[in-house]
Image (cartoon, rainbow, N blue to C red; front, side):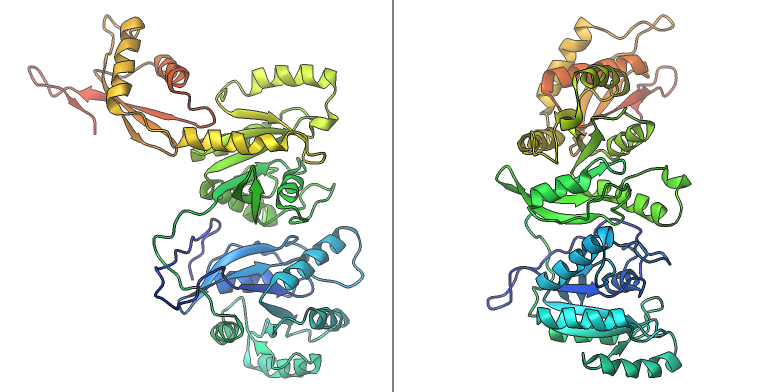
Length: 468
């Protein structure tokens, strides 16, 4: 089993023969009371450590989908928070997410702690599952040895049929369980290569409680993510398809980052890794800032993560409904001071709560992605660059000035340029070239990378050669 602490494994579907099943992947929902090992079981099924796991109840709060496969068949497994009857406040929202997962699933895995046995909460959950009329597979988790496996037969009393004893932590019995899932699922599409590109991937990132989940819920048209005034409600990345501006987008709500990954611990450490991985897996990131609060050091770190990952960037100043005239004045000053290193980022003022200006997000995303994928023909690039260095040559250093001989665009997503020169360029001149490049060709909403390859001298009388 590979241990990938984040990111999504993108399943590619082969070209199907006539008569083979097509359509959406079947869905398996994993439900149960808190702390029975649901997320550990999800990690075992998907074959990588991606769902956040910690030995305390309540770590998973939203319903979080992951791509999975078994014996060449693809399906989606949905992790859920702990279900409890008569739950209050946030626990009620978490339970509602689990119930929604059951309603939308093709098969339900009901996970029970084999060591503890059935409890009143388990029996109440069985009643909820029977009302759903969905196929249910009873999983007796934490059956780490033969003795516990034998004791798990007592779970027949729940009336859900034969319990499948497994150890999600060690893998014991997981193969038999996956075979049972395949038998219960409707026919699934086969895994293929060269699948057409799906919806564009957008990561919603920011500090805790800036409104990421509220924005996701507004676009998805449902309570897709648990929202609470208490910061830190989201732990796992929550993946949703949403229609924005007439186009379907894949939105990923991520945990709010409080600390540097190196200083975080426990749940927060793994959530931080997944957030970083969500940025890597995305094409464009929407960094939400709280308009009513001062731009913080943590906001700066998150923006740096996006820029260093080379992703297109839209900065959304959320909670604009809370901003008065005085705050706008100081916010303008903060933007000039704190965001001066990324003047190219697209900025929006919106309110996820009231819906103010959220319709402007789709055009901003499209513009950022178009810039992210822009390629300039080599001839056009060098014609522009020649005129630039003639008008503003590099300053003389030590009696000589390095010259730019040639430039090429080495790649896109983000745009990457290589300058072949007679010597190293001053950092200030390199920034000047980038600024002028943006003025000429746009690149609004995307970082660009410019590297310099000075010509290497081979000795007296020798001809120069660029560093490779």
